[in-house]
Image 1 (cartoon, rainbow, N blue to C red):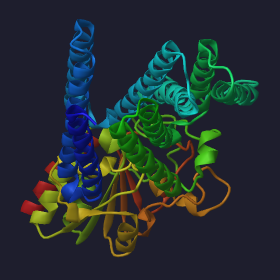
Image 2: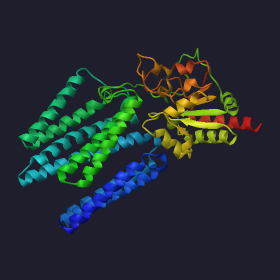
Image 3: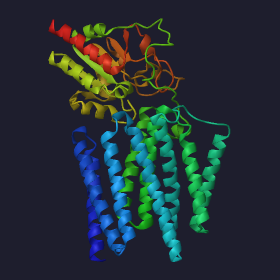
Image 4: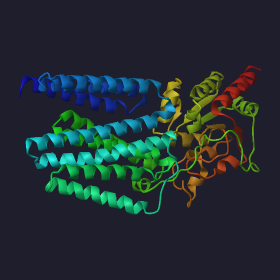
Length: 473
């Protein structure tokens, strides 16, 4: 082993240790920021080590220098700009876009390695297996992640998209991709066969995600994230890069665990989601209670809500996608602080899949400097609803739908927040439109529920002004 190889190997080992430590620290909100920085440091070390080794190995060729420097500049600039300018509500689609880039890059590495081996005249089994798997998995991730990002962004309809014969076509492209991969590994090492694997996998990625409903899109993003990690690990095996193997394995494992947790929180299997989910509507859509049956609905005003809050002892705020879409986390935090300053106990009930991705609400509230101690997870929150004077639901829908306790509907069996156990409920949303599951919510017509129709940001601002009048009186 040369001195350069030893230094690079040591750098990869240090990067791997930082990845593991950073991932461990991300388990708790109080250490998540530090964990992210630790992991980013590990990735920076791995990138620098790889670039230095590549430049030395290239013998100082100008083309290699230009390609590496240009790639670093363009990729780094894009990453920094997008990360600093992205809205919190757009993070899931940005993650999906990153998944696509990772899967596509891994597939490109496998293709380059294939060309390199063919030029050398040999393709051993230890190279053909990772190449085939990398092209297959990376291509599925690339096309599937782009479709998922389009659904989350609204460029592609959030409704399940199917057509006659879609299942048969799906099975056909899977069979073609797998058969071509097996043939490539054990028999024919041709570029044509690699391109067949590539094309079939790209088509399958599109066909796999199109039937997914809007509610299940975040789960698919998480699944594709796990597949991206697997593709990167395969690319690491193909080019014998330990850093890629370790990083890919960590991403794959973490993505798989997250996917299973999300599916469990929705009481759905990953297979049922992949085969086609539900989800047709956006809970934040619409501008008012139009086209809705308001016969059994009790509408309230900002003053009505303020009176209840000002004279309550225990208040539970239930944030949902409507809060995130309106960027109303700061108003929610201001309202909570106002109530807390006047001796009222305020907590936040966080559902595992509220918003568009796990932890979405936690991040939004942390951005507004909400103390972690006020954020209650599902079990803690449900235990507190029985003694709650008023539950203020802001833009949440399916995650607090009591019909989940009944069989025979799209949300049956889904763990929900027991908002209806509170003594009084106020639901702040723009309209009576259903959530992603596309069904009505009986909570809205409950006699103890008041519907406050408004944009989350403006509605909360009006409530804050009204509360100030009552608590200062």
